[in-house]
Image 1 (spheres, rainbow, N blue to C red):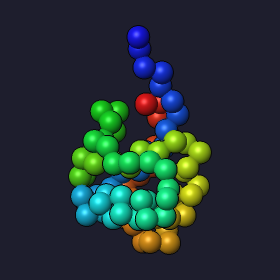
Image 2: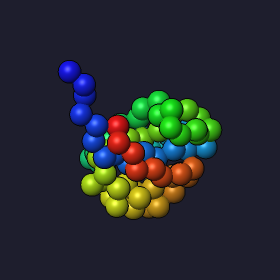
Image 3: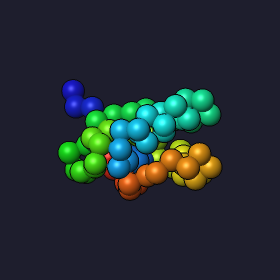
Length: 79
């Protein structure tokens, strides 16, 4: 049976350090999501991305601004 794809938001980063910082603050702040390998549809500098339900996008964007996490790009994908 095929897995049902869901709309997700994916944040990519220039460096692994920024991806790890996102993981640290995401967990600490109770934000939805987790680190994943960058999906094939995207290319990113470090090869790691933060993936979360699309509904979490505003909260995660605010988190990245408040914690000065450098985001390369933000994508909305079916994953």
